[in-house]
Length: 58
Ligand SMILES: [Zn+2]
Image (cartoon, rainbow, N blue to C red; front, side):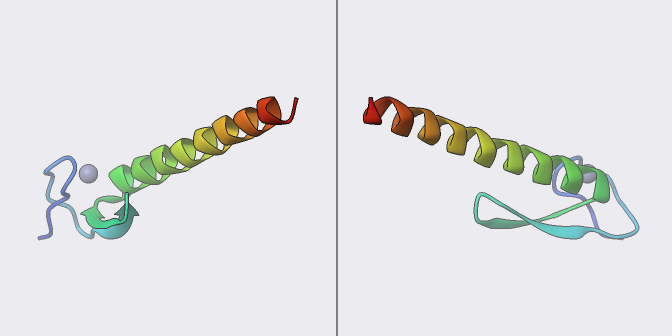
């Protein structure tokens, strides 16, 4: 049985998710969370860049 690298649980199947450029084998639950966290991080980074760009133009 494969083991999730995040919660150390043995699961029926793991999915490979890229987190910070590294491939990690996670169970569905952790994969969802990792994807969400990654998307949030990307979104907030874009928001910060937007804000800085906005300030720079003033
Ligand atoms: Zn897991």
